[in-house]
Image (cartoon, rainbow, N blue to C red; front, top):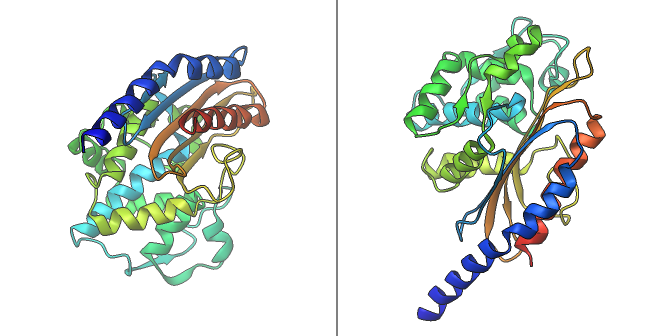
Amino acid sequence: MKKNILLFLLISVLGFAQQPALDSKINSIIQGKKATVGISVLGFENGFKYNKNGDKKLPMQSVFKFHIAVAVLDLVDQGKLSLDQKVVLNASNLLPDTWSPLRDKYPNGNAGVPLSEIIEYTVAKSDNNGCDILLKLLGGTKTVQKFMDSKGVKGFQIKYNEEDMHRNWNAQYENYSTAVSATNVLKKFYDGKLLSRKSTDYLMNVMLSTSTGMNKLIGQLPKGTPVARKTGASGKNNAGLTGAENEIAIITLPDGRHYAIAVFVSNSTETQEVNCKMISDISKSVWDYFNK
């Protein structure tokens, strides 16, 4: 028992001592880039913390679909919603001109799709129509904000849905999170402080199946690494500005330890390839650090 405690303390001390090396590596990745990059890393077992611009309030874009899914599953835990209940799809909630694999699957609508399928498309495939369907079921963004506030989630704000953000470029800046808030909420989620164990396991599995952003956090990680993640991206406006290129994740290490990572690239005039490569390079640097 004493040996385990000493080993834990040694790992923790060494972890904090080596942090400048990680900082130097990350600085070399973002140096000279025309973008604001918010980064937070949180080791679950040893309490390791690394932040850069971690308290800047940056637009989440579709990262907020994680928070929305959690708020939906809270209502499932309360018995107010059910994963099996049917959601009617039609022209009113399958909007055109937006990212929606759900609409592609059901182009003519459907008499009833299980709520679980809407959640899975919204989180794992980042479906925009699915997102707004969930928000309507919840009663709007205020319900998500109230839930996150009640759980002590700081540095987070949600005001607008996907349709709003498509109409108004600036709306995305009112849906913000700090990188530190993102890793903290992932830790609360993992620890079962947001949802029941059943709902936590369910959403973890959905996030593990995410198929968007393959060139971001997981781009350079070993194949098969368990990464429960949520992506977000704004695209570019007419002035060539990227409002957000983001990803948050819980990553499982080969030895069974875990860490949360959030990388938010905001107000970037770099190409999408450069923005995503920054995220990928940062993720690989953190992975290498934890696997030393």
